[in-house]
Amino acid sequence: MLATSKINKIQGKITVPGDKSISHRAVMLSSISKGVSRIQGFLRGEDCLSTIACFRGLGIEIEDKGKEIILQGKGLHGLKEPADVLDAGNSGTTMRLLSGILAGQEFLTIVTGDGSLRKRPMARVAVPLRKMGATIEGRDNGNLAPLVIRGGNLKAIDYTSPVSSAQVKSAILLAGLYSGGKTIVREEITSRDHTEKMLKSLGAKITTEAGKVTVERSELYSQGEIEVPGDISSAAFFMAAAAAIPGSHLIIEKVGLNPTRTGIIDVLKEMGAEIEIDNVFTSGGEEIGDIIIKGKKLQGTSIGKEIMPRLIDEIPVIAVIAAVAEGKTMITGAEELKVKESNRITSMVTEMKKLGIRVTELPDGMEIEGNNQISGGVVESYGDHRIAMAMAIAGLFANDSVEINDSACIAVSFPEFEETLKQVAK
Image (tube, rainbow, N blue to C red):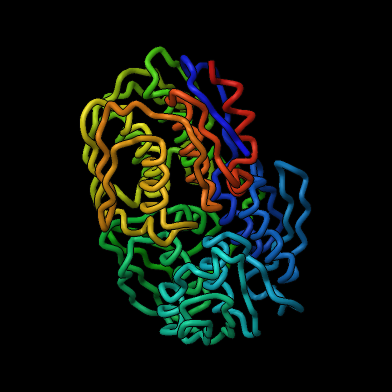
């Protein structure tokens, strides 16, 4: 059980684990590229290790050297039919993106996950992949895992996604590598684009324009090395805490600054935070740099649907600092939070209320009163890593210690979270 309590300030220089989204994609895309890939800065969280396990099950040789992964890619058609069920663990990214690749394979695969993942909606990827010609079956009319996938012989489609989801878009684009013609994915609001950037760097025929991505059948070739930047979604917990505690000064080095992920910076600045970016460079199409935060009293704000795909994972920690900001914060357009590792809207509202925070649940978000006196207490994580870390940050502002049950789930994305917090909490 993790417990945190009030501190004076956040101060120091840290790095955060490798980006979760990019770590997943580096293993997946290197596996279906030709040649050896070295992945530097790989996130050793449970979700990304599930991706490695699945691709080993598909016959890929992967050497795990800690922060470096060496992988022998087999090309688009080099995967082998697995001898057993593939287990995606707690990882929605693994299951959904892998479904896109498996849709192109002329063999049978069964993919399952843990109790939480088996409750998450899969029809959003199964429906378009079926339109392309894959056979996908599962519980609840193919909406829930375990999924049984038999692929091969795909045709291109022009698909408008009903949700702005990088996982849905990526699954279709990956299947598009195996189809004849041009596969097009359209979104009302552009979701994160790590898949497109990495596909382009590996030689895929892919073009992007406003609200539309087009991919054609194409072979991928390893570029030798992929550098995974620090994960801005992990950095967000420390950014938010430092921004909201006057007198704090924090530097987070080598963080991914992909514009589809930097909504947290925009929102913190709207709340009055002092944030600078320094030492910027580009690797594998991804912008990387240092984030410098100075703490001050923040103001409440309104966060709506337009920015949501750029900060969906950061909403739990934004809700926490909104509770100590001046004035009201309104969060709407966040329905996607209901189908994460837990229903993050209900989970956050329930646990924030336990700490005496004045918060109201909305159908698509929450309304948070500012200037709360946060009390201590015991809170639940719901087995959700981002809820657990958000509650740990709440403890830094609390009058008594906050204890988080089942905090082991933090290892999904940030195994060194507690250690890093101790390093900068003063």
